Length: 110
Length: 120
Image 1 (cartoon, rainbow over the protein chains, first blue to last red):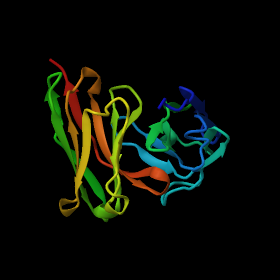
Image 2: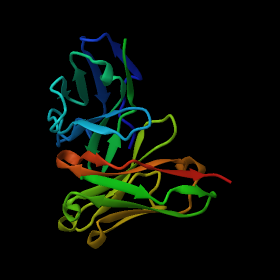
Image 3: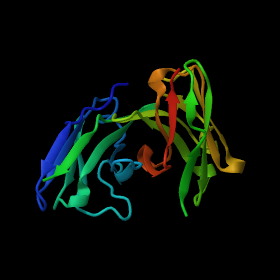
């Protein structure tokens, strides 16, 4: 199972929006189940769940974070960027009998 | 408080074994699927494996990179999951996290991680 493909970096100024892509295959991201999730990770910390089942936000996650999917590519959009949004972002997907993560994207708030 | 606490990490020689534990509290552990995820220094997240709950026959699955060497188990009476790692390789060096899966196999609760170093 190969890692899902994400751009290495993305950036935006405070208040702007940034969108991160996550490309897989019909066996994972584009599969029958809409089981794509997104995680934020700050240095030295454990990942934090931001989006699950492609579009759903856990309680406590700001509505500035949104997810979508088209075919084999999922996307995470962060609107109204804030300084605390800076960090690493990973997508994840169910892939049949196992799971797989994306390669990770470093988001910088300029 | 909902939390997962890993323990058991350390330094081990190549070819050696190590057993990690993950103690859960604050939620219904017996009804939860549990996964292990690792992260090498400066690298991305890598899914290691999982164990489903009793209703799903405690089914396990593993990444190809660890299959046949690592075994995940659980003790619902002690709210604890384990990762037995055998035939360790230098490339297994990483921080190991345990995490709970929810709807859509998303991971909503994470431990603080435990460091495993495989080196001679």
